[in-house]
Length: 396
Ligand SMILES: *Cc1c(COP(=O)(O)O)cnc(C)c1O
Image (cartoon, rainbow, N blue to C red; front, side, top):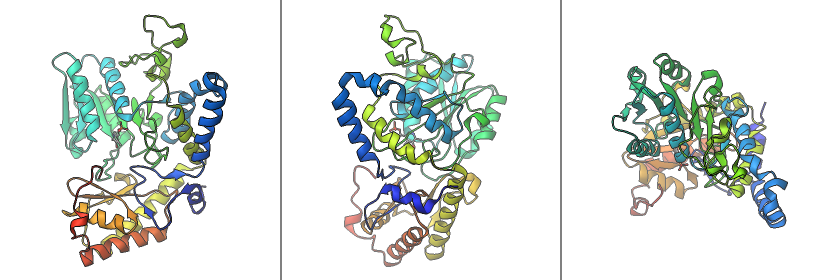
């Protein structure tokens, strides 16, 4: 069992701040600066080019992939890190369409994060006529999984509302209709236990700078089910996905299994930060994390509803949500700015969502209560109704 009263001490959080934005950018683990400095000074500085072998840099994308794999229920050897999530969406989608060549429709939903949809649109421009991205309401996905669908491209947890799809049921339905599934785990990995192998997901991807706390610019990961690993065709045929990168052949031959989803040189310094972050995750019992996350989320919902008339945007039923709580208010942006000015950091998503990430590794009941009370005070006194809180910044 993980002792969540102890894990907070592993993070470097500024004094006086309640951080409810770990679903967007996780905080700094205390061990990260030294690990990154060691990578830069000793590994890079000391070993120069030989560090690729001496420090095992080349093997790290697979090693780190497997450590993430435990959190998402992946079979060992089928997850690899690299690039950004947007790139991984493109790779998975291109491979899935090739694996289901008789079909032309990608099914997604309007709760998806725009980059996933943009990447699909961009890919469609490269494909022959007849391919289509069909985007339906999140509640209507199941009824649109028909025998026309080649692949579903679904983000398990909606970044705005926190609504969660039923991965097991949708995957089974897609398979029954002859479709493949791609699951975006951006708001799932590190938020609750995921069971990719058990649900028979085909492809999955996610980022490591949100709940996993690997820092801004940290690499993404991709999972390909073992049954597709040697047939999935890599659309981004980079040299490190080649079967023998150091043979320097002029022609491309895809590497074995998940290795083919590698593209170019891995981000070594960012991998050091990811390693330090995963040292914490290696010790976390994911079922205990889920129980604690729901306890804190329910406490926050109850406190906010008792003290304000904000409308809950997140489903009430725990099985239908991830680890964030969202409320709606037409003046959500200004309210969030006023809250941040008082040391409670959440974020805002257009048009009207106030978003709060619930992260058991470093949040206490007391902070949850204080955050709700501060939010209530801002609403009761209308302190948000001030020009300083209304000017939109570039990043909301
Ligand atoms: C955060 C997020 C992304 C971000 O993609 P990057 O390429 O890492 O910038 C993509 N998809 C979803 C669903 C996200 O929540």
